[in-house]
Length: 598
Image (tube, rainbow, N blue to C red; front, side):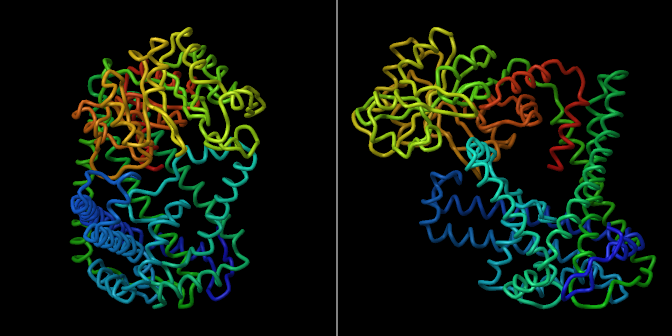
């Protein structure tokens, strides 16, 4: 990344020129980056939160989940508030981009553009993009770029994340793996082709639709070079983060060894400094990218700007310094709190997702036995009803993925299903009945987390039959039952109050709504420590699914999450032991710094 890469319609990806401009004006870049990012986070973030809360109140729901989404979208006032939320979020994200692109544009004209002028120029761009075309900007800034990992800015908007369970499910079959990799490649390709959209909108006066088309034309035939440039930039940033984490942790390790009582304070200070460095470093990276992208659109190359008047520079520097000091203090206090010692009375259950599936087929007796050998606290399984009313342990309503046959569970009898061979990762077995699974669990002394699934063609008393099996094998006192369907959860709580019952939630925004449940099972990307506090205040437990990353397991254990549902129980058990053995805070600090970046 030291030469020029020609791009049709632009001046080239002049990395050397961009670096020289950045080095010349790095102090001004930092002032703009820090001030704009903090102001956006402190203003736009709370406004987005208030608009979401108002939309939920208007619709009469406490939280936005897959179950309440329909009710929210049917309420006109809630829809209007969500539209306003989208406008605010898109505007704030665009203004963050504007802070860098318009500043670079000013340098191209030989002058340093200051924050008030940047705000006016950004507002003018927003007015020009008002109307339906703003939706195109929202699509790029709030969906495509975050999903592809190309978002620079919009720090107040929680990054979109493809839930880990989706990738995990798809990668269980060769066809699914191919689809998963293909979708990732397509998303990456689309992001590379649309890389210039915000820059074109901000610097050329194009409409968002025009910017989409112009970016697609300008990047034709240059995707490989752009991908290499992005990879190089990512490697440099990763190396910087690793160095920062190493330095911060080294100081805390020394404190752990010499002054353990002072370690939380030392770690909190180190975290505050790391946060400030990340904020400033992120701003400089965003500035460098803005200069590179500006080099790909028509116009004069960036040139050294005149000096900033000393008095004004000092005043703006003082404002940025005050904002950074506020950030550092707040981060240090929050960091010290997050590094607190784990409550030893809270044990995070390790729940084997469909059993231990690295040595057996999911939801089979072998996966149950493997989980028991590993020492999993609970085994999660899925129960569906067969055509004749029998209960079988299988996840999908169609057998294509697990058995290679295009047959629905609802069309097959219990005998036909239990005679079906299922295959996964080189292993073979057969579908067990729920009664056989429960009997073996009782013999092994393993509690169960039973998820009741519905295919829509149930007959008889599905809920009563599930509870009857648990009672027949004396598992009610130790096991749990959960379902996505809130009506099913309410039915169990009403008819069988002695059964510990939970609701499964795929995504959640807003306040926690346990309803009638004794516990909630939340997809991990929706988790926040505040939701855990809300759950415990309400007297319900909080489980998270499907957790695979060791760092996240450690973080959830430290937070005191009640259970992690994982396809890798051996890894989760190991990481729970690692947390239990911690005597200092340096390892926690290392994980926390890396989580800030990821």
